[in-house]
Every structure is written in C-alpha cells, then in structure tokens.
Length: 232
Image 1 (cartoon, rainbow, N blue to C red):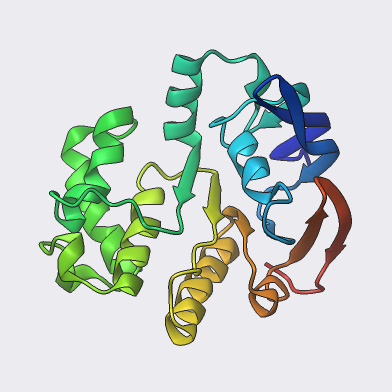
Image 2 (cartoon, helix red, strand yellow; image 1 turned 180 degrees about the horizontal axis):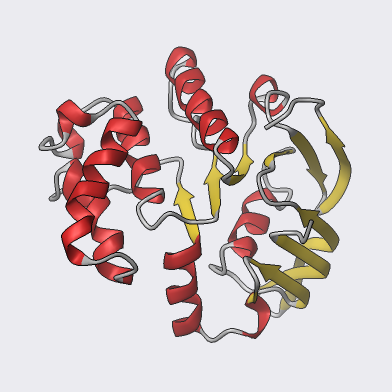
C-alpha cells in the first residue's frame, strides 16, 4: 500500500537570534492510509513541529515530505493553502472556532473557501457533520454558548468539511475532562474505522495506547515506533 505520508531525512531548525536551534533530527517515517497514529513525548521535543510539517504550516530545513500525493517541500505558500484546505482537516487544542459564527456557519466556511463541493450541497453536508458528532440540535448556537467538549466536536466536524484524506490533531483532548476526552477519542476511532487517516499528538498515554500505532519522540528524534495491536 502506498503511504499517505512519507518523510525522508527531515531536519528542522529555527533561528534564535544568530543561532540555529535544531528541533527535529533525521526523521524518516511512513504512514499508511487508514492508520490511527498517536505521537507522544515530553513537551518541547518536536511533536507539534512535526504536525506543522505534515500540514504544510511549516517547512523542513532539509529533507522531503510527501503527503496525500503532494511534495510539500516544493510547494509555494498559495499552493500549500489550497492543498491543505482540500486534503487535511486540522483539530486544535483550543478549538479555534470563529466566535461570531454559529456552529453550522463554522462548518460551512471551509467549504466556501475551497469550493470543492457545489454550493447547493454545503448546507446539507454541514448538517450531516453536526449530526455525526452529536450536535444537530446545537447548529444555531455560537461557540460561546456551548461547552468545551461540544466546541471540540464542532471543530472535528469543521475538520471533516471538505472530506479530507488526513485528519491531524494537536492535543485535541488537552482542555477536556476525562469523560469528554474519551468521547472525542471514540469519535476519532470511529472516523479511523471509516478509513480516515488520523495523526494525533497527545500527552495522554492511555489514549495513545488506544490508537493503532504509537510513535514516541524525544529530543527531536523518533525513539520508538510500534503497533499497539489494535485494528483501526
């Protein structure tokens, strides 16, 4: 099976004044379609940087990154923006829903931006996605009018708006209580079972062991990469 994600000899450093500060070293990684991958490791060791490289938000200092059939390291910023909107759904720790739009409008917005789906189909799809995440009765609510767990589920629905091949999540349960975090994780597992590829950064080791693959990063290097034995 052709990998949906391939990183070859990826190195990333940031300039701190006149000093180059390495963050990731010699990352080689293949992820197959349909895998549910949890990335774990101490804070400040490169996990979020790796996600930013996978989504084209950041660029490698060296190396090759191919995601969803595109060589991200060669694309220009405008190309990356269009590619990202069509191929990747991103779920953030702090939700990042637009506060002036209701939940339904927040989900329609990515579809309007990419125009991947005909305009007449966008409202119906947004309603379908709200129903998928259990929020069909909250469609007209502003983000401030619903709970944190509901906001995160709405953010997941928004990430699915353009039916992306890949879903990337950075500490998606970090601000949620245990029961709500478990519910969000169950939703990710459901999406994985439907064939979506998921890559999630988490500090929650119990959740990481519930993914189909666990990758541990320490000091900017992959220190462990193993299947958990669970079928996505």
